[in-house]
Image (cartoon, rainbow, N blue to C red):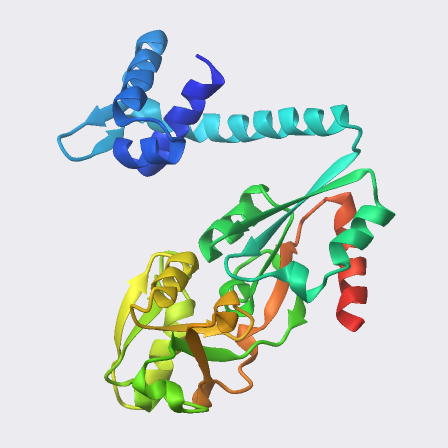
Length: 298
């Protein structure tokens, strides 16, 4: 049993759908099925119960998934750290940035200062949706994330630092009848379809908007986007109206118009924050937060 088989098994066990798992692994579904079958033969045990439209783990498969998940994560961490050491670095600090937000533009010298002052630390940057970023913090795949306050404020074991106050806005094509205004009220959107982030990606993103609408006495028309990146893509394509913030890169799109929402003025839960696990033992975290605080003040 090799590491590729383990990765394939863990992905299939998490998705409980071979087609979806194969897509995530960038292999064909028959290839994945063959890998799982070979693994079952090698271990002499059935790992999945296969049905026509779904699969489920056997008791042995569920036990193996539970135990192998932690081992595989530890193994990949060890290999990665060995590669870092081989390249001459003493540590790696992994940062996740919310889709659609350019932290480097906000603090153009932050990363450079870290590179210059701490040359033995490799800084790794990645992007992700709300759900991906918070999951990555909890499982240790990243050490710090830049996200929005409302998504992490109620989550346990996370600490955060406010980075920037943001403003909720509506983004729409410049050809939209409402685009000629300078400001908009939620009541103006009662008959408009709004793109919102699905609860699966962020339990708070859509509920904030829906609660405001309910308080005004109407239930809005809306369509869930699976994540922020998809919501942005729909808005950019001119398919409708989306709720974003004024720091989202769509705010600078030449074909789109952003409008402040009257009811959302001075709404602190939209703030951009840096968040990290409260129990983090990462040595470089303290140094990075020091550099970030200096960048915020300057």
